[in-house]
Amino acid sequence: MSERLIRTSYVDPTVDPPEPRQGLTGQQESRQDQEGYFGPLHRMHGAALHSWGVVSGLKVTATTGQTGLQVLPGVALDARGRLIPLVVGGYAKLVQETMVAVTAEGVALSTAGLPGECYVTIGWEETFNLTGVGSGVFNTETTPLLQLRAVDTFPHDGEEIILAWVELGEDGTVMTTAADGRRATGISIGQIELLSHVDEADADLGTPVSVYDEPAVTLRASVGGAAHLQASYFSVAHRNTAALLAVNTDSGLLSVNGRTVLTPADPSVPQNTLEVNGDAVVRDRLCVGRTQALGRVHAIDTGGFGGEDSDGAAIGSNVPLVAQSDSTAIGILNSNKRQAFAINIEENAGTADGRGIPTFYDKYDGNWHMAFATKNGDIAVGHNQPSARLDVRGGLRSKEVAMRVTADKGDGISVLSHGGVGLWVLSEPGDIPGAVFASDVDIRGTLTKSDLQFKIDHPLDPAGRYLSHGGVESDEMKNIYDGEVVLDENGEAEISLPDWFEALNERFRYQLTPLGRPVPNLHVSRKLADNRFAIAGGEPGTEVCWQVTGVRHDPYALANPLIVESDKEGEEYGRYRHPEPHGAAPDLAIDHSLRAARAKHADQT
Image (cartoon, rainbow, N blue to C red):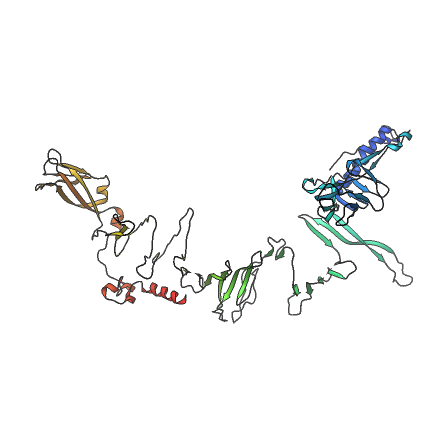
């Protein structure tokens, strides 16, 4: 809040040298001094150097269960920098312009008419004294306005100062009071210097002595919002008690008395170490390793474990947070203090090569459930003995899903293998499908299978039966095309095929079947060329069924030819895809190792 300062000049600057002006001060000049200088100066001093609130006094008292409040004398400062004195011998203004005298007991304030939550407030007002007008005395006195204001409509703009919060009953009785909304004034300065007394009362006889004050403590603010306190000794104490907190800046000793006791470090503890005996309670953020906490507890270091001794025990580290346990190392409670999550170290063999398995648990339904574990870089989900980089165990109950993958936009699962099988699916018993695809499947390489069938709902009994067919097999990459045609008046017909036909196929073979009559001379009169062929030798109007087969010779087929016969090599030699039909033992199956691993998991479960 800034205002111009304009006052009357009582020196005439137009003469040289300037001289004091003669005569009496006029009313206009006095008004100029008061309204243009002293009033604005008073307001700016209050608003610029101080924040608004209670300066002193203004205690509010009441008796619960009874009506009425009492506001004791004191002073407040509003947001415009105006002092609001409630002083003995002066007056205060109540609602409906009622003026009351201020006594040593303060001012009584009625609580009738405003049930519910209210603020007791004081605001700046002035009242003109009419009693002196007859004798030429025109006085205006600051008469504070005391009110009860409803909490939900109070503006909180500093024009009125809150002295107390009060809850009133329907009949105006005081139910309870609180300091909610009450605030004290502050001061805006960059540095505070405190002085201490110095005397030399114990000096030797004949020595000059002095009694004086000298700077002892400096409190100042710096860039970035930091506060710096400079003192040789600093202590905090309750009234008439010993220091609860003491800092000696010369020795660097910090002492705290109370529930949390900081004691000097014993000789085995390195220097610059803070040692706490007993519980330590931090009621705000705790920061270790930096100047600003970014969370309730914030630790930071350069990271990394240090060396180990001959038994593999750590001998130092730069890890920000270290937990040590052979059971639950880290536990998390929810906001209701219920156990919710834990990290355990399990199966610690007590050796350098058997250090334990980090295992994660949750307790959502009130029972601990193993979520996942890590061992030698492998991850186990649902157990803690992984036999693969990711080993998921689940589906222990019927219809339970061991792993579900959902992708909103991208791929659900992407598998890439270098030198091995990308995805190997096995189910037991053997009559259960290894994989079920409930939507289209796009295979962009070669599909190798032992059997090919389709299985649909039976057309004649779709609710009660299935209908299955086998696929047509060949030792070539063969395509089959067929259709029907009617011979023209010359007993001929031309059959056109798609424009890609010869780009895809070669080595064509033909089949012709007349319908309704024998046609002994029916034949292919012109072989395939330009994606068409012709037939002839029949009676006009004869309906003919035709079939053409071709062997693929497109670039992909030429680069990946069908190998009809091949030798079994490596681990596959002497083993079978299906040993039982050949009378061989089941453990001679090519995928026996995968089946054995599955059986081992079942035994562990």
